[in-house]
Amino acid sequence: MTADSPEALPRSGGAEKFLLFIEQELKPKNETFEADPARHIFFGHSLGGLFGLYALFTKPEAFHSYMISSPSIWWNQQCILELEPEFID
Image (cartoon, rainbow, N blue to C red; front, side, top):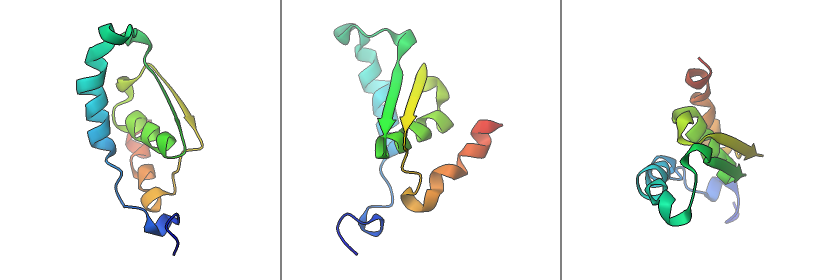
């Protein structure tokens, strides 16, 4: 097992805490950064794409639009896919 192999990575990336940070601390600063809250767009690639799927599946209203590129669905034995059926319903 090498340091960059999937087996060596932690099992949890803290997606729930990160999404809370975005919602509770970052978004309230819209005025500081002149961001339009009606046009919050998420872009994520690889592990960022995995976080994007988490946000989309658990709190789709967090962003106006999602652009997800090559999400690392392999992470933690593809546990992200457990959230998909409820999202689809």
